[in-house]
Length: 81
Image (cartoon, rainbow, N blue to C red):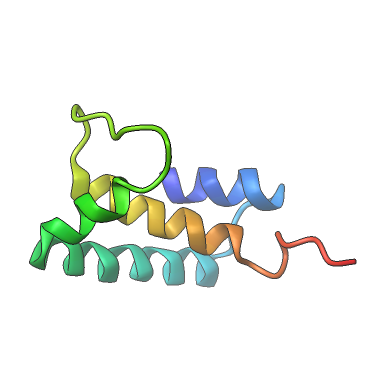
C-alpha cells in the first residue's frame, strides 16, 4: 500500500501490475541487504539534516527510502527541459 501510494503521489496515476511487482521486488531486495547488514540502514538514515525518528525500524525505513528514491528517479517523474 505504501509503494502504491508513493507511486500515485509521484506520477499522478496508479502503478500497473508490472510496475508494482518490480517495485515490490526492489523493496524486498534492498530489505534483504539491510537485514544482512543493519549498520548500512543506519548509515543511510544518518544522512541529511533531520535526525531519524528512533520509533521506526531502521531497516524498514531505509528500504522504503530506497524505493522512494527509485520512484523519484523514474523518467515519468523527472522533468526535462
